[in-house]
Length: 275
Image 1 (tube, rainbow, N blue to C red):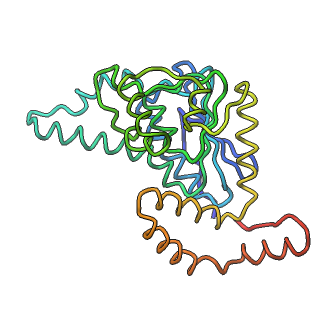
Image 2 (image 1 turned 90 degrees about the horizontal axis):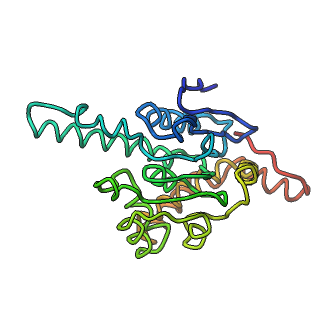
Image 3 (image 1 turned 60 degrees about the vertical axis):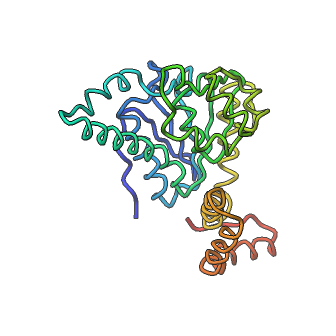
């Protein structure tokens, strides 16, 4: 069944074969995350998750920068959005707002297809929260990163403080979060935040798409299960992870994909997997 493409005003969505290219598309505002973009990001990720023909996702930004973080106009309007005569109810509304924004970014993790971030130019504040949700991160040489929230007097609250220490050394994550300093693509690669640095945004786009196509050629069932296991294993003990993968493979191992992979190897041809 074909899944309808969501109506999007701040995000561009394009399908290249089995790869969905999801692009933050407010280049005049450096792709700052306004209210519409938060919601549309979740809609696009849910669409990619539910569309069988999509096997991998590349997440990028239009224009000179990947993303400048949360739109300051949106941040400035929070007080009015959560206003209530009862302070407790106002704080409850704020908590619900934060939880919803967290869920918008967590939709990247919950998408069963691998999501590859292609980062160029600025990637600051909320943008770093966003890319920390992705499966893999690649950067152009001009990319600049920072955990910017401390500089506006707030605690980062949509994922960086929870996910970044699982991607880089704890002390490195703490230094970046406490200082809010900028760091470039080479340092991002050195500390393990990004997998690879490309010479230009154009080379980055081509390189990320090439990796996504490689993933898309694999067994979709195996790739989806692998992401499930990696995410589960990150948050659970080794024993829990081993138990879960045993249960998963008890259900999923004997599949048409396994048969096709074995047949293709025997016949010395590329496998052809169903969506």
